[in-house]
Figure 1 (cartoon, rainbow, N blue to C red):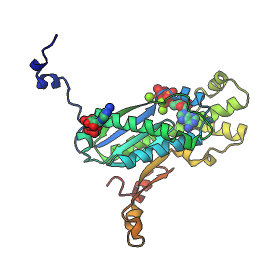
Figure 2 (figure 1 turned 180 degrees about the horizontal axis):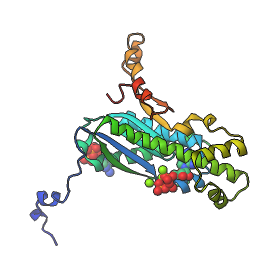
Figure 3 (figure 1 turned 90 degrees about the vertical axis):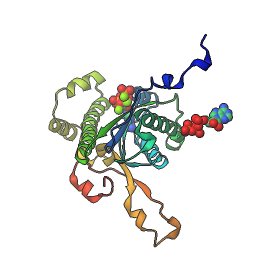
Amino acid sequence: TTDIDKINPDYVRSFQVENKLMPSTWIVIRIDGCHFHRFSEVHVFEKPNDEHALNLMNSCAVAVMEKLSDFVFSYGVSDEYSFVLKKDSQIYGRAASEIVSVIVSLFSSLYVMKWREFFPHKELKYPPSFDGRAVCYPTREILRDYLAWRQVDCHINNQYNTCFWELVKSGKSKSEAQACLKGTQTQEKERLLNLRFNISYNELPLMFRQGSSAFWDKKDATTVDKNPDACCKRKIVVVHSNIIEPSFWEDHPWILD
Ligand code: ATP
Ligand code: ATP
Ligand code: MG
Ligand code: MG
Ligand code: MG
């Protein structure tokens, strides 16, 4: 047996290797639901897009941003959310495992706590979990490329899934629907939706096509004079905008300032 008094704490601690994220870079933490393909089936999510499930994700993301400081932006689609920390944030000394673990656990417990609010008539059958990772982006431009990549992914997946589920709803098996869409280009999918199902892709809800972006509304900070009771209470807004286009960032210059 070990003699407790002989253990040198520095020696034990020396096995904890550094996991600090690079200073002066935008930290992005992306979380993603574990096995949500199954979770969405067990909980009978509407396919391809369950609006209540997306609103639940958005509500959890807003609560995370309110509870932990230093978040300037977040973008969500499907079962994932990307949280952007301000460049010079010192949260948890920029230690990756602490930051990721606290976001993932907070998000998961919020998801469970808020479930009833969004699914009052559906029982939560088992505890959902999320994985998370942290990546540093050194410039505003690269950070915007990252966000654009997630939004392009949203578009591509949504277009495919919309076609897939229309084919399934029209009587095709899942493997037939898959075979039908194999190798098709964007324009062919748009034509399929148009001609066969009378759906124009651009008229689908914005949240499904663009995902959701949450950020602090600058306007609120300036309303202090008019309404002293609402003093300094900044609010987080959720929008469904095209964040690939420069105009979004030109219209909201304070987000990445
Ligand atoms: P992994 O654990 O590797 O992330 P996963 O099953 O979660 O596996 P994802 O690639 O993350 O796979 O995809 C999430 C899946 O969850 C989607 O394919 C979709 O089936 C389902 N899903 C998530 N959100 C919704 C929603 N709002 N409406 C309908 N289905 C959803
Ligand atoms: P941090 O966020 O830095 O971890 P903390 O407040 O959680 O801060 P810890 O060092 O983790 O601080 O200590 C946990 C504290 O939680 C204990 O000091 C104690 O006050 C309280 N605590 C935890 N478990 C119990 C318990 N079973 N009974 C009573 N108090 C508890
Ligand atoms: Mg995953
Ligand atoms: Mg997932
Ligand atoms: Mg996912």
